[in-house]
Image (cartoon, rainbow, N blue to C red; front, side, top):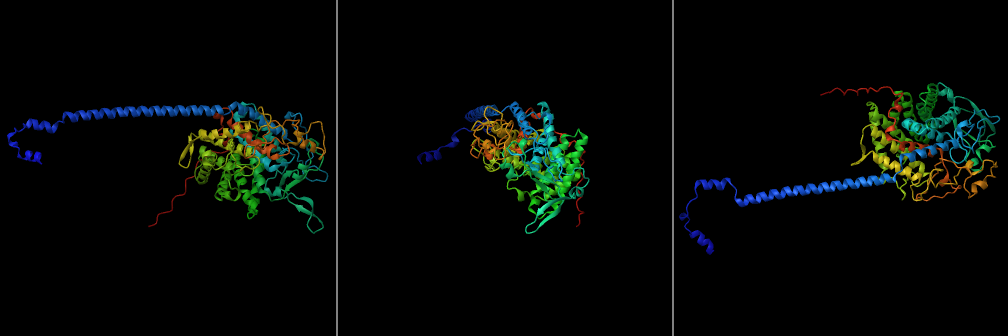
Length: 599
């Protein structure tokens, strides 16, 4: 208070007033102290920016180095393209070891010979010659359905990677393997018919004992043969196929198997593209494919209330797509898009992303996505193509570990069949689709795809594909190659009748059991065979009596070969336009005009 009173009592008038110039300086110029503080702040801010920029640069450089080292380490862990080429050579040899009938001179398998040449030609039989083709698993059964899928996958791989096969010297070999299968298919139905009714109405007579009725002669209208050989007999009789002396059962289709007809149509249509330079043969294949597809369509409509109708939906989609590529006929594309709008995917598969010999949806989706990426046909098919493009993206997302759609073993094998038997062929299927989609993205200048909010580069798919094939070739917890004859360690007791019995030993059905039950290694090596594979815990037993571990299959080897050629060599050797050889230039129709405006 005293200080405040003194201030109030002070005579302020006694102090001289500052000049106007002085007052002007006070208003227009900052104080010296303020100026110094401002300059200090500016310098501190500038130094802060310099330091922050330096820290960010160091962090960025460190992250780049870590990523580069990780990427380098990752690729050091992967197989080289030359390894995949070497495995490809082996994988193709398996088909020479599964061929049946009068074998060609160049088959070059010393312990194999002509076998089951009497198929379809038994005394009193009115059927045609059904020798040829391929056995499926370790026995001597010929399944047209599975064989068709195997031939389609081989053809698809040749169409996409023709130059790669040529570069490794396997083009003529794989073409010969495909033709061995398609020639057999052409013998199983009347491929010279002009219309489907001509084929279906071929009258065949067989004896049938109807329940509670005397013996009758019943007239049938067969379309084709589904299978040669009966599961029970073929499992019981453990003998070399060359020594088969019993009558083999023929399973005939009598108008109730549109799925088989569609699958065979896909095999013939895809092969026609492989043999497009052999015009006469290619047209013969296309003619057969058209007949089969028409039969499948009409049969499916006739049994629309049957469960087989829904199970044939994906085969019709699959075969219709292949026929569009083989012929360029837009009516097949129209049929496919109509089928796609009638989406029954939920009715036949709880996992639409699983591609296999029995489920073709993901394969058809990828083929139609190819059409959208490279040709963009636009209206009126754009809606369906965009839908499939989106769906195949989701399928690819499901293969990534971060999405937990499918379990993996500790060794990294994806469990697409939920720890069921034959896991390797499912993994190989996914590996092929992923590598191929990666090539589609690269060739269409698309950097990657999205999974929800996340963006992934195309190389991620190729890395996934490599991880699965590397597992099959030996980078697994057991350090064993699941491809026979490839690598240092591989299965030696493969469940395979011909390989388990010495060439010079002719055994009866029961006489061969001692070879089946033996703990000794097979006397003959089924080179290139991919066995069924490990269990859900990476465990494996080299046991001839357990097909869940050691039985190879035609379908499994076909997809293995497809995946191997996709990963081998230079990825720029992908064939962008070969599949479009028959597709005419596309000029999209304009969408319909909007409805007239009414007030």
